Length: 230
Ligand code: SAM
Image (cartoon, rainbow, N blue to C red; front, side, top):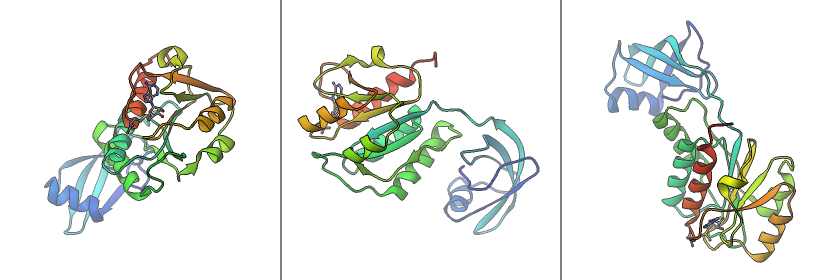
């Protein structure tokens, strides 16, 4: 369960609101039951429910069960996609270990607004589900030209190009890394030219078929994360 509070030896944690409802009513946990907690900073902790009220639960921390994980410094920059598919993309990107999600608005984007609170809730849920102790960040959407301007030029930019490039597994180098995926309608010629001209950019291919934007994002991330030598 995700909590905001610091987690440390001897500390008590109060759980309220949706989290208390989830533990008490959905999971039917009560006094004496164990619960695993994380806050994105202090690893994972085993806690025991010490008091259970209608709206709040008091938990006592027993011991740390996982050190804080170090995820590779990998950003997925992607054009926002339609409702239903973006939730899937965010959830799977978290499972695959992305550290940061950067929505980038492009000319052929069909969506230019994102409910960041909802996305953050999906990120936390996905982290809970897959046992991550870190919580991926999601940034405010920005336009492609702004993204190209503010990005750190020393961080390699692997740009997924449906028109072809170096096969992803051959192109990738150690973190940090940014993977950029285009919108449903693909990149325009001007966008492709601007991205190719950016320092540290490499066009990568994910195979001969045109993948959906979310498939491309996840294939590119999975291929990167499958490397165990960094
Ligand atoms: N129209 C489909 C959709 O609705 O999702 C396909 C969209 S495809 C043009 C979206 C993006 O996925 C592309 O801009 C590119 O970044 C990436 N992509 C798709 N297939 C790819 C491939 N074979 N290699 C590299 N990138 C690919």
